[in-house]
Length: 479
Image 1: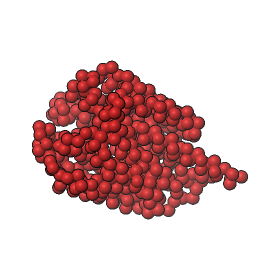
Image 2: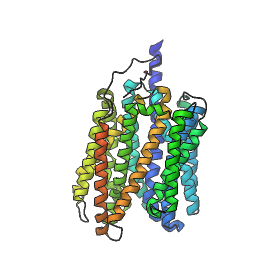
Image 3: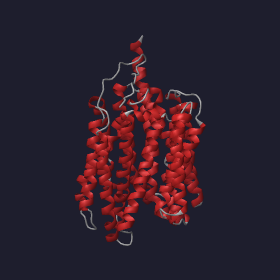
């Protein structure tokens, strides 16, 4: 009786992997293509600098703030149901962004897009963890990470090609047919599941959302308004205070916490999330400036700059599936240590050679190292987090991990931008390079610290026997 069901189960796993990977690809791609279209949007809609900033920040803000609540809603109301809602919201908001007649309408649509993306992103990881047993999960996570890497790689290319060949509205229109095709497939192929607690943690939702909103808003506005401005200080204070209250509430008050604080007593969960925070801080803060070197300093078009970053952005697509397979065999720790070390070396290389006239060939070895390093962390980190909690807790763990990574990326861009502003400016290519060097060295140091933090991730442990139905049991990894 069990043998005939095996092919069907295998087909179901493949379908789940395809659906969640394509959804994640769409969210990842859309987040990156917008930056290449900003100059055209400015002219077409008459947007000022603040309007352009909020075209990017509106998405980032709603995405970061809603990751934890979205995971909690998936646990309560059904993960497939919330995944479909998130996908529908994202697709609809993409159409609204394409039709936006004013900057304000575009910013509003981008905020709604971020909300849809926040629902989709953590649930892709949760749905995968439920479908694949621990013995095969690393491979699935490798493919999932590789497809996400493809979104990163194609983002600048698609954005540049669309803007140069069509118009900026098409960077949003491309999502609509993909979403419309994916919705019925996801509804038919994904299995429904819920989390361990049927009750919503309203206190945790309110405190966590307010804390992330204040923190991310303050960081995003810090450079523009000044870190000592009342608006920024108040936002950061409210955010920090609310997050502190959230920790106390979840640990001592909540009967059914949306994020059990005992997760952080697991060395695997705590160390891996620390590594993710540091990596997103260092690497995305650095990449923010690297992508501008080709356009601002060396005067390439958006498409030409995107092509030149492919040795970096394309490596996760190639290496991530291999890293996922290796994480099943040798554990996550050695891969994560090597990945952070490679990224630190890559940024140090670029900081040492970057100048107004640096030949492109001098960047390529560093780009390959950096992209390989990222790929060695993505899937193993996801595997380590999921292995540190019970299967029914995957949604809570995934939401927390995604929120921590997003905050790390926002902090990295803001703080490295502050370092850049303290040493250089956009006044001339030479001034830009003067500011970029110190910012990159800070990113390099942060990534080196991440490599040290990765040594705290637990080593590989024997995998428990599979449960009936093919999905292996997970035993939390303790300190």
